[in-house]
Structures are given as structure tokens and as C-alpha cells.
Image 1 (cartoon, one colour):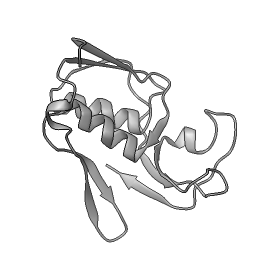
Image 2 (image 1 turned 90 degrees about the horizontal axis):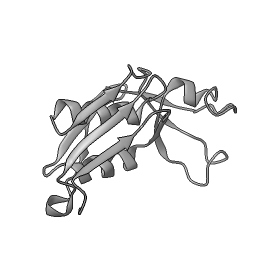
Image 3 (image 1 turned 90 degrees about the vertical axis):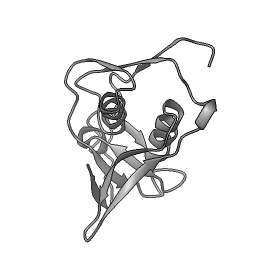
Image 4 (image 1 turned 45 degrees about the vertical axis):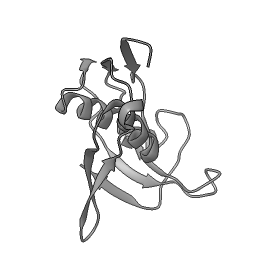
Length: 138
């Protein structure tokens, strides 16, 4: 709150939790924001980020991205850009946004993740993780 400028360095960030993306976006805006649509087999659902109102960050925002920025980091950068909330700087991002569930054996809890294809297949982290279900996030 007391800082005039916030720099989010999302370079080499392959993705993350949907809930974290929603909370972060909610902290940057003074109104609820639609961050995308979840496309399921038979329907499409909007994904909303709820605002924190007056307790959110009101200063200037810069987002740094590169070719290894994927998934949730790409969505965050694009929302900031489209809503004219800040400036996005850097290279073209990876270009893959998928929502997946990682089996409980791979994580302490089954959580929804937004991850790039490279990250999901383990190339980025050096280990192979496969998800059971994949949903497209646009």
C-alpha cells in the first residue's frame, strides 16, 4: 500500500494455482474482473476475480514476462494489459494456458492449476507429471 510502484517479475514462471491468480488480480483492481472463461465439454463458465475494494493496491503496476512465462502468468499479464491497469514488458510469452488437476499422489491436496504444457509435462522442472483431466482456459 505504501509503495507507488509494483513490479511483478513473471519471467520463467510456468503457471500456478487458479485461486492464487484470482487473489492476485483481485488485489490489483477496485472492481470484480472476469479473467477468462473455463471451457468445459458442454458449457463455458466465467472465471471471476473478486476485488478487495479499498484495501487493494492502487499504485502503478509493471509486469515482466518472457518466453518461459506461461499459463497463469500469461493470464495475469494479459488482464493487466486489457484492463489498462499497468504496463507489460518483455518478450512474447509461451502461449499455452491449460487448467489441470494433479493427482493427490503428486501433491498434498488435489488443486486446480493453470500450467503451461511444458510445465505440465515436466520439461521445465525436470520431472514428469501427468494430469488426469485437462480443460481449456481462454
